[in-house]
Structure formats: C-alpha cells, structure tokens
Image (cartoon, rainbow, N blue to C red; front, side, top):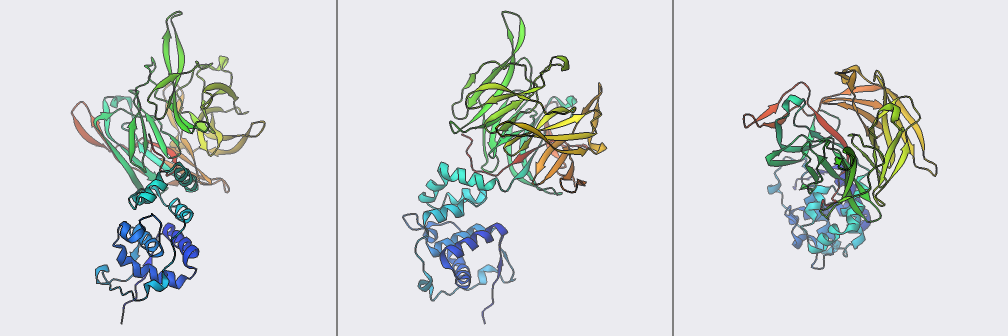
Length: 471
C-alpha cells in the first residue's frame, strides 16, 4: 500500500499555487495530484527541459514543476519517509495536459515572487530573462512589493568620537521583523575598510549611504549589487548627508548633495549644490540654495528632496528647502504650525512627514503635509517618549529617538532599544533588542574586534524589497 505524502507550503507560495490552479486547472484534486506527481520530474532545479518549451512558453506540467522547485526551501514534508524513497508512477499524464500558459499570466505570477526567487527565475530560459529584465516587470514587481514593507537595520562601526580611527571591514544589511531575530540580507566586505556612515536613505529598494570621508555608496541588498559613486566636490564641512530619489520625468534616479566652499571674492563660506544622475557618473553643479543647508538626513517625497535650513533662530525663516529633482530648482515649504521644533523628517508614503520635539524633549509630535491643491499640515499624533531613550548631551542638548512608521504603528528607536506605539490604543510597548554585536576594524592594532558595548549604534530605515538595478 502506497504511503500518502503531504506537503506544507510557505503562505506566499500557497497563494501562487492557488492562482495557477484557478487559472489553468479549475479542479483542485487534479492540480494537487499533478503537483505531487511532477515534483520528482522537476529534479528540484530550473532546467528548461522540465519547465518551458523552446519558445519560452510555460506548459502545465512545467508550471507545476517550477513552483515546486521555487517552494522547496519552504516545503516541509510531513511524512518521515525520505524523499529518495518516494516512488512516482505516472500513467495518465497526457490526460491532464494543458495548453501553454499565456505570457500575461506568467508575468503576474513571477511579479509576486520575492526578489530572491525572481533572480533565480532569470536562469530558466531566455524568454523569462527578457521578461524579468524589462522595465515593465521591474516596475510591476516594485509596486507589488510596496504592499509588504519592512525595516532595514544597518549597524554602525562605532559609537563615540574616541573611536574615530576605526573603520568597518564590512557593511551588513539586516531585515528587522520586530522580534529578537534579524535576517541578514547581504554583507558587503571592504578590503581597505570604510569610514563610519551616516543615516541611510531609501528609494524603491535602493539604499544610499555616505561616510565621514565623503565616500558615497549605492546598493540593492536584495540583488546584492553594490557600487561606489564618483567622488563629489570637496567640502570645507565634512557633513555626509546626501539625498536620493526618483525623477519621474526622466525615469532616472538622482543623488543630490550640498557642500561648502570659500567664495574667493568675498572670503566667505558659501553653500553649494550638485546633482548626479545615476548612470552618468558626473556630478553637475546647480544654482546655489537660497539658504545654507543643515546636516540632517533629507526626505524624498514625490520627486522632491526636502532639507532643513542652517540658520540661528532670530534669522530662521521657518521653512524647509524643497529641491525638485526634475526641474533641479529650489522652492520653500513652510514649517508645521506648532511650537515644537521640527528635528528631522520621517518617511510616510507619498507625503512629507516630520518629527517635532519640544524641550525638555519628553514628547514628540508627528506632523504630515497633505498634498492637496493647497498643501496643509495636519498633526498625526503626539507620543510621550520613554525616558530611557532620551540621552542628555553636553551643553543642554539631547539625543532624541528615531521615529519610523511600521505598518499602522510607529516605532521609536535609539541605538538597540525599540518601542512600538499603537496609533489606535495609544499604548507604547518595549520590544526585544535586535542586533547585539558588530565587528569593526581598529587601525591602531590592525585587528578586527567584536563590539560588545551596552549600546550598539544602528541605523534603521524603511525598506521595500525590489529588483531595481543600481546602474
């Protein structure tokens, strides 16, 4: 008597199999019988022999086999019997043969896969490679991935200025799922080391980081693609804050940065600005900004970058600088109508959002700019900050926590401490600490050391899995 085999699939794969069944078979029993029967023929690989015809069209048997191969990392055989002992007898396969699957169905199925699986699918055949490499597919995959946002954690090389001589030998990218565990997506190694980096900026799955030595790197952790951008203009002030965003008019990604130079005619330090279009390899000077720019991480919203102005309170115009990536021109956006001071920007979909703190920094107000015909600021919520994530600094200054939107909640993060604020119940809860160690390079003794300090400095940023290329 034959032993019955049952399989449990990853939820994402289950959805895809259901889509295939409804589209092609229409009968669940027939579909499952063919799925199990053809798993052996698939050989757990993406061989074109079992998956596609020479024309690149996907047939019923090949469709089932390919998804079995995709799912094998997550499939859990319930029966203890080893896979190699399973005997498969196919007597009536032609009876269930189906015509080739339309290209638009294949497109819809593949675009719903995680980036890791999509990359593997490129090796199936030339037709799939062409489909996945097309701009239409990259855009469709990105839009579907935006429905599954997550948080990316990038540990820093050191905490204090006393470690200024240290440089990291690697840069690790972790996907944080609000638990005690984090998933390492990619680890980039640097033979000569890399200086301490600033807060990363994110756009469509691409991460841009700049260092204190004015190195600028761009990567897609999911694709494991990593490049260093050309050297930019020298600046008198070493402030590694670079903006990054998408220009919908040219369909190009652009990096933008401010820098300070001495104006020879008047012997005065002035703020300059330059832009690099991804793929050109050239930084282009634009018109100077109307005000000096502060070294705060900029925000990218609907094709514009937003910066804070670096002026003392009596002279401050109480506005943000807005730089349009398409026109490459500056304009001004007013401050939120609150007494608290806007400290930094917060990523919130397609709307400008900022976190405002009032002394003694025990409360944070979240304000959102509604992009209507007449843009107006709306107060989203007010959160009481836990005392253990407010750090006093010399000179009556304070280090405030990072605010990140996660699904329908808000996270307050400082170093390795994480709190989750529920918008509906207004309750705040401390979460388990995340990354606990980080290996850095000490140039003084030429050795690598694992940092085991009580507080590990980590950058956290909203992140969307994508297959957008970095070049």
